[in-house]
Length: 103
Image 1: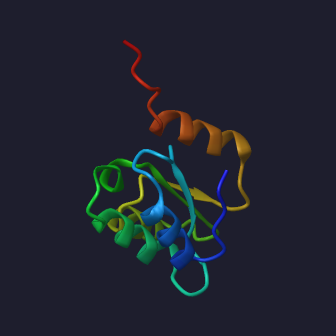
Image 2: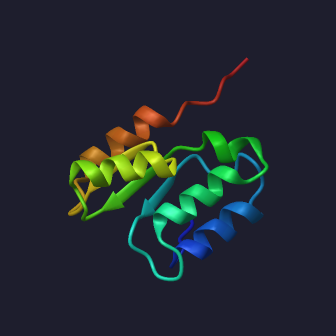
């Protein structure tokens, strides 16, 4: 597990990682320096294949319909409200992360 303490750090960690290094990103929406929306938008614009496909899950106290719409517009795949329900998080990850193809 890799941790970032703010949105800018999350972007930099992903940008500097090897392609395919991460299976998913659990993105807090309200972070200092750069919020999760902007970090997600910038990850999605990176010039690498996995930037467009990596599952990004919003973790936020903002649970209104407009918040979910904003998460989707930023490029997030799922929106989970805090306080987090571990089972919901695991279900979202399982739904979004594809197992590797074995020949």
